[in-house]
Length: 140
Image (cartoon, rainbow, N blue to C red; front, side, top):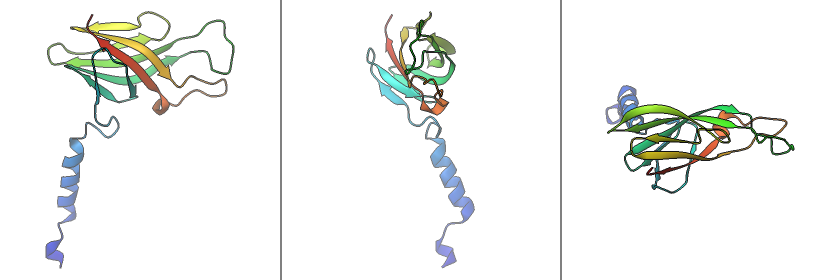
C-alpha cells in the first residue's frame, strides 16, 4: 500500500512549486484594472493596468481627522507605492490625500490618489491590513 502514496518530500516540493506561482500569498493575484477607471488595493496587493504594475506598499502616515471628531483641518494620509513597467523599470512614489503630491507620472502613465479607507476613529487607528487604497491610472 505504501508504494501507491507519494513521499512527503515529493508532496512538499509540489506544494512549494504551486505556491511560487501565486504572486505571493500576501498580495494574492494582481487586480486587473482599466485605464481611467478607479480600482482598490489592500496593503501588499498589486494591480496590472496595461503595461504598468502598481503595488500598494504601505501607509506611511495617517493623520486624517477621525470620523467621530470635528476637526479644523482634514489631516493627511501618505501612502507608498511601487510602480513598475518593463519599458521604464521600477520606482517607489509617495502620494497624499490632502497635500501635494496627489499624483505621480511614471513613463506614459499618471497615477492618482483617490481615497483611503477606513478613516481613523478617535479611539483607534486602522491596522495596516484593514487599509484599502483607491487609485486611478490614466495617460498624462
